[in-house]
View 1 (cartoon, helix red, strand yellow):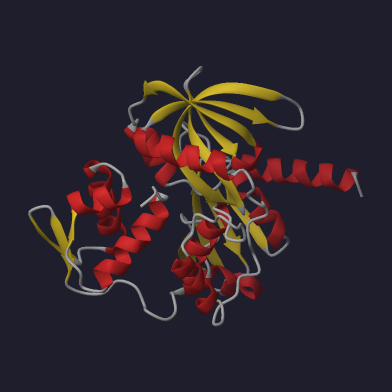
View 2 (cartoon, helix red, strand yellow):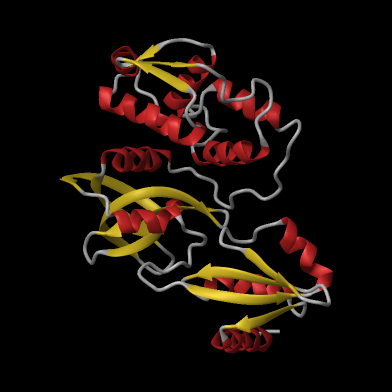
Length: 303
């Protein structure tokens, strides 16, 4: 069997586990033409994502309960999977996504639909495959990155591919200056492996795990933004978290609520505040008020 993507392989392993099959590391490694270590990582990833549902005997695993619905995915899982499917080109002839996975998404979409989708049409599939490999094996890459202003080549330690604000980003460390950076996947033109590997910086990894927006700044102290949300719009904040750090901490006598966000950069919260004006008020910090006023004045200049 030819080597398949880790996503394809992991989904197939999940399917076999759900069927009650006993799966052994060595045999799977031979079947998928990967190392035993890679297969063990797959099982660790499955356990991390779906919890403790497998028993282990020697190098073999077997599930004692099912972890996926047979007919329709849960909305959250579907949205995650649909974004991954989009990333790997579900409409392409040689898609990296199995027909069974696509069929599951399509069947689930009879129940759900998502009007907010990734802006990007991913066409650089070879680049994505190389990034996947480099992330998995912690290889330092040489990357050609093109923006409207310039084309640059950078040595990069790739940590993750993240979906943020309806765009896909490669996040990691610029090897040249050791800065934490975000790179849009669609703007990466070429990827070459180097012979060097990198070690994961746990603080940087933790930062990426807790990332809320592409405007977060690594190494900056947390800023707690306190907002007063008026009664006519409070239901939106009670029903939905606009950022993962959102916390409703107080209800005022007139029914308004106080909402807190923990951020590292004012740009993370700027768009949200402007969207809900004039029904939202900044309690703290005061200099955020000044920044929002400057932003609004600049916007009005172009009207």
